[in-house]
Image (cartoon, rainbow, N blue to C red; front, side):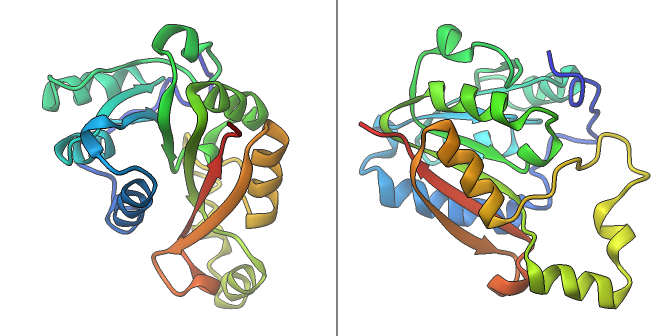
Length: 210
């Protein structure tokens, strides 16, 4: 069990605010990658209270999700009792427990983990050969960082006083390096929430070799 997320608590089981600008692109990526939703198995690594998993299940995807937060999974099961959402960590051997999937999504999670290499190794093992990982995280780049500095909003952005907040701050270069070193190929990015140079989040789409 991870030590950084298992104590996370949630106010409600509604989709996270970030999902409003992340999920439409995630859905587009899945629709462009797979012909039939009802023939596509998706694993949600760090599913929280199940907001994203629920949206994808309603679109016909076969969704399974895990999260280390007992509070999050309890709320998920209360609101989405028919979804297979369970307590589990990205540091566990999840592929032995659940098998492999056409796509693994992990939305706004990798910025919270202490050991991202172990986390993405678990993700890699969950993806079928030829399948994809879809990873979103807050975007950081030169112009956005400069805008934060000039506007005096660095503290608000990095949230040092928030419990269970972000501990890794990813750029396209560092996230691409992480995914390539894990074994993924053809890492592409989508930028969401604002214009690309000032995007709120970026979404990496990485393919596992056949």
